[in-house]
Amino acid sequence: MHYSKELEEMARKLVAPGRGILAADESTATIGKRLQKIGVQNEEEHRRAYRELLFTTPGIGEFISGAILYDETIRQAASDGKPFVDVMSKAGIVPGIKVDTGAKELAGSSSEKITEGLDGLRERIAEYYKIGARFAKWRAVITIGAGMPSDYCLRTNAHALARYAALCQEGGLVPIVEPEVLMDGDHSIERCYEVTHRTLGLVFEALGQQEVVLENMLLKPNMVISGTACSDQADVSRVAFETLRCFRQTVPAAVPGIVFLSGGQSNEKATAHLNAMNQLEGLPWELSFSYGRALQAAALEAWKGRSDQVQAAQKALYHRAKMNSLARSGRYSDQLEKAA
Ligand code: 13P
Image (tube, rainbow, N blue to C red; front, side, top):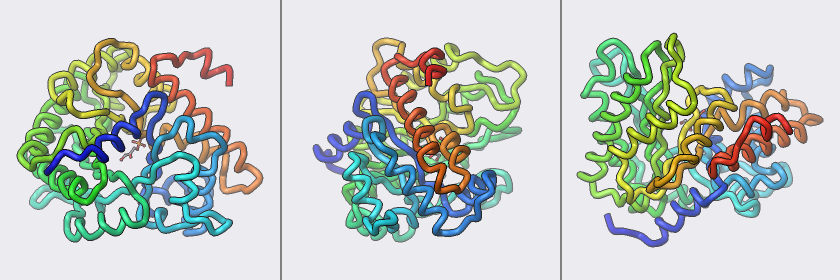
């Protein structure tokens, strides 16, 4: 792969100071689960109306540099007929696209997953570029448990991530490489560190073997954090410290930015962790967010499918985006959270 100035500029734009990414690329099944929680039917018009609410939030472009969409969404339009990609571009938000087709059972294993979607990917990338996408996402899922993750799972997922990233760079999209080590389980932060370290090591080895240009990509990792059911939860400063200790050893400085997933953390925790990391000095990469749930949960809850609650939902999204924007420079605080 050849270095591309255009792709590096796009990657840097996505992690520009004070801004981050909105992950709104839930598949039809996943958004269905979120809608069910607020009592809304999983119908195309409801999915469309909800995404319109997100992208038309007044002033959101100040904090959001790009949004990741699902195949259905990138082809949809606002209620006035304007394609979403145009609505977003006008708001200063770069359209991105999820190109994997989901995590499926890994052959010969009943408990580990491999992410699929490589077949026909070159052609799909070309089509998405034409529609207006300028970056992409592929998520690999790594589970911590008894005997897991296996080397087999880590290596096959790393290989697929690298194949995806190389195809994106060839086709003019900035690849977001997302190896997610899940928070589920009672494992300690030390175990999460160990697995994340191994995962990232193998991912960057595969990216190197497949000649992916590091300046032309972004990494979307989990934080190094205690398992959800762990009885000894590491505090915010420990999470920040261990996460960066792990990344300094595994993520080359040539990568322009790291955009975290929230992975099931509470809204405030996800913001506080990012904030604490950005208070530490001497980092070679931009540290930003690419949150799904931690940006959207409050908005969904406020909306509940009611057209008279659109403004309230937009206010909730605006607030979370602003708090995470402040966390990009370590200026977030409890007082600011509560002041709103
Ligand atoms: P969460 O922030 O909800 O983990 O979603 C981010 C994402 O895009 C996962 O692939």
